[in-house]
Length: 274
Picture (cartoon, rainbow, N blue to C red):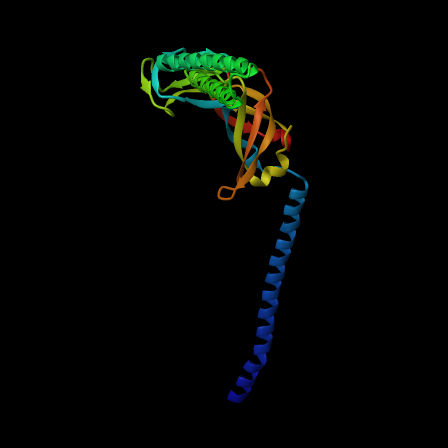
């Protein structure tokens, strides 16, 4: 009786193993089927050319296309700062004037020396025509006159540093120096910007690059004003940040508005690109 029971149990083992294998195969097939259903869905979404929802709303900031830090090109005392913080200026307007009494005197000396050397050269030319002087003396006189002319050019170049002119029209952002202050070459004097030519700058996910083309339109809502403006993309950054997987995008506001200032920030709405 005991032998028959053992034989019966052994006979049932293959059936149990077969059932377990069949159940495992069924689960694996179901998992593969689910994965097979999901993959075409992703491919279909990419093929449709849509932008993910988290790409549609990004943060942006207004920045000036032209801005610079004016530094001193010479050492000396500032005679006058023509502008104060927040004041406007036009292109080529004088911004800073230095005390250049010594430099002006050196220029006058160089001009006087040039005049003397030119007269000497003219006299030597006349003597050479009368064969009363050697050609060598004439050549030396001409060389000295050319040297004096070069000294005048150097003095004039130094005098040009005595005043700093605006490279573009704009506004003063910050003054780093004061009138009657003595400065050294390279010392910062003021920061200026062109507040009329502004750009919208924002960081977009790198996977949205195919949708962000120059000429594409979008909207930007500025927090400081609470208004929404129409804008368009003008250029895309030259590289993708490998760490954040983002790329810099630049645009411009097409609506005319006088209340826009550099540094304002807001939200970018790219829904129109869907």
